[in-house]
Length: 133
Image (cartoon, rainbow, N blue to C red; front, side, top):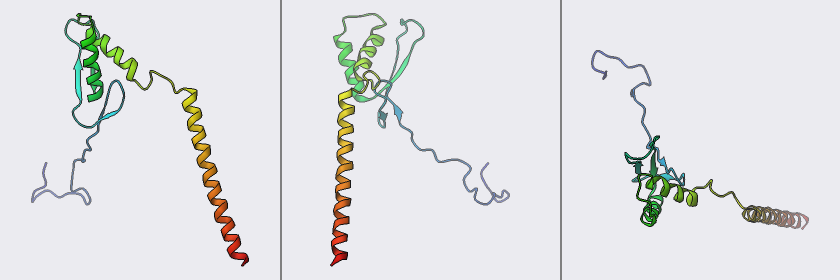
């Protein structure tokens, strides 16, 4: 009901609806946010139950099309097989973080801590020299 001359609104309740923010959808493969132009896929009629549906970003969609062109399979399972191959390559959960990458991140973190500590000591020495003069 819209407020008219005979309807009074409670104080602070000028709007009865909430402003909705556009929430991006997530790609079914790489789990990145899709802000513009999500591409939805649903399995064809001949595919066995349960028939799945996916939402893909542009880069995963391109990789899926390349894989489907490469695939010699011509059955209704073609989409599911190609999507599984693309997901095995592009999913963030497909490969764990290697120890090399973890060690490299740890080394960079330790280097930053040493650099900040060095700067703090330099500032402390400059303050001590300025005070003693």
